[in-house]
Image 1 (tube, rainbow over the protein chains, first blue to last red):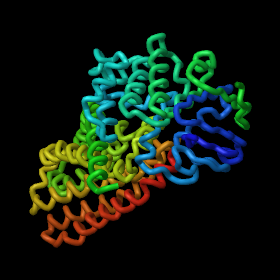
Image 2 (tube, rainbow over the protein chains, first blue to last red):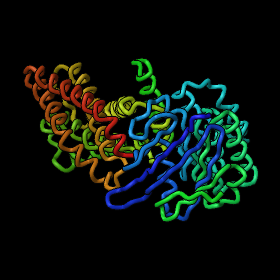
Image 3 (cartoon, chains in turn orange, purple):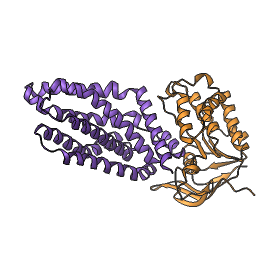
Length: 216
Length: 226
């Protein structure tokens, strides 16, 4: 039996008096994709930040990539996680290539992978373009190029399809399938369940941010 | 994490910050001209008596450096947005390496700022009565390092806060006072042929203390800013 890459038991998150998440149980096995849906403010992004080890839950137990939630992960464990959030994590003044080169050097990845990854996402001809002179769709594609380059074991996507054309949507699907094929796990958060469903085995709904309920 | 890995990360952060500043041109196109204008305006406000200008010139240089140096330390390229901070965390970057790399980038930019302003100060104030210019070069370097450490530390403390723009200068101002006093006293001591050792030691000790505090507090500050 595979050890789940994500295992949350009765996890909750509070900010002061505000309870954002409560009673979350979530298990994601290697090679599996799971979808999270819910209205604005239901805590979807907060849950992703818990899974990304960026936010320690206020209550509950469990582990992500084998690291207990209440412990600070090692840098090596952190590098196994990729998060694509609402806002692109790019430096506007750097070119698309320089943005990836920065990541490659810090992650100890060969520089040749940068060009390869950008070519794979259809940005081979725009490598020298500054990130802040690129469209939202192009910036998103750079983030997927980063995922292809760093090959994470856990991919977390927050509204991955937002503002993407058909070609970029296919790229999302290809990236998700690539991670799953390598035995990694993917968690997608979306307002658009229809676009997410082909990529996930199970879907959960956050109702008022207080519980996760399987819809399958 | 090995020492080699730490320094490699710090170097990459410094390199990235300098590259971004090179493109944004915030220091070169805004801060340096304003600093030069401030040096130019002061004699008009306080009078043009040569002896007085020669006496206050070096002090003015350090005062302008500290005031406008804050703008260098708080430049846009030294500020990460939440997504960029999360990326650095997930890349496993040691927050202390970020502190060191960012401080190094700011120190180099501040040194450049001082190197541009120094000849302007000499031309406008003609501080010919000072001996020991070699010591002044050392003090200029120590002030650049000290101010960059103070600015980076204040930037780390206020990262992610809405009140950052107001709070950061308020944190920097009192921490910069020893830098201003020590650098001014070195100039005065050089003018009067007195020993400057105590003041130089104070500058070095302050830089060391700021480095230690910045490195030790880097991780807790990074965690609270998430």
